[in-house]
Figure 1 (cartoon, each protein chain N blue to C red):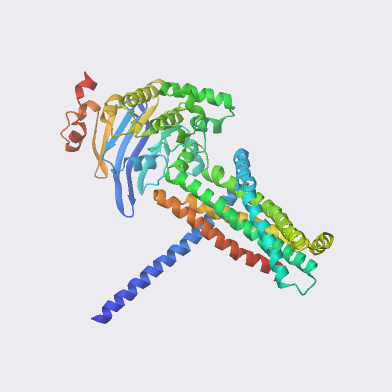
Figure 2 (cartoon, rainbow over the protein chains, first blue to last red):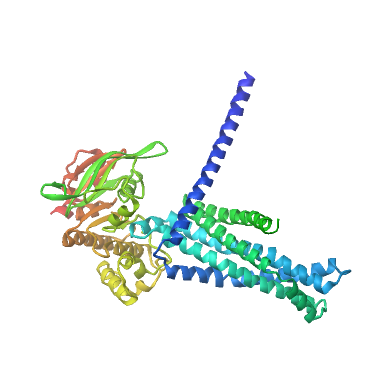
Length: 266
Length: 257
């Protein structure tokens, strides 16, 4: 009977879809359990200060060049594009205002978040996943050390502290990029441009950017550590953990930036 | 403390079963490790020997059965108590599982450094006192595990396991990948560790020469269960076909003359 075959096919598709959906919901639940557990170990002494310092160095200091370059060129591009689009208006104040608002509110935090997700998130996920598949995490547990406390907590603390600082530095460099273009290419008056920048600088923009950066820090470290910690299947598992951590972190950064913007200015 | 033949029972495994996706790897495993005893577990690759070890140290949870270490039931034990209990154990993993972000000396003293305050100089001295028993040069202490050979990594992992003189030693294939000279050096070390500290050891191995050198008792795991138990000498007279396959390439006279 042809309709029986069709029914079988339909049920098979339904079964496969259902199984995938259940697995998806289960992995979300699993992630939030990991999130809660990781937060618990962040606040639980003893803290491994040497590990935290190493992470701060890696996440904060060594990410500075890539974050600086990205925001610097973004500020330059913004100044050029804004000038081309707003030549009929009072250019000095318009360019300064748009560069400032775009960098501090959105581009600074988001570009820094994405750069750190690519550089640090991938590294965290690959490192922890390799430790998982080579039984190093199992070995830690047998040597009187909690893997969550020793491996995960320092990464979360360092990301939460460093990314807001990186964003503040990135914002400054981005605004500087806009300033350089405005003064040396567009021949604006430096005093007027600086005055306009300072006039439009809002505390709420800086607070909003810092909040975003702190949230991104949590997202990058939690997602990367989660995928790394739950890696399996050898080298393939390490690759999957690394790719997933970067993709999911990036999507979550872009989603959460909208939510935070809506909360502040919506 | 439970005793057998006037010796303390250090590890007691009762009716232990473990499955993955409804496929049983271990079924109704029963054995005991007595104080001062060196037990070797043999079996074909994939027979579940390492799974058994991972159940004993709590990395895997058995489907059913009981694991008692020093009179404490390990199954369903709280994480805190399990970790305290594991501190009395020295464990080596099949592939070493050395921390590749730490130098070799930091790997060796990792557990000791967690328990007590120890400066770098003391730590290196302690690590050196252990590695010289294993035929390793002091130069490797300041290198990372990735900078030394596989055989050296294996010995560093053994050094990490015996650091602090734990009374229970669990070795997963300690001599695999080592040359015969180093292999027999490791065997001597296991024997010494058991005899001098009054400790007990479980060694998982395929190396029958090593079994003859170190074991007081041998367990064969075949078809998910313990299919043979005896002493190394008894292996050579056994009618068990699997045991015969294992001992065939070995000349017993070399070991038991």
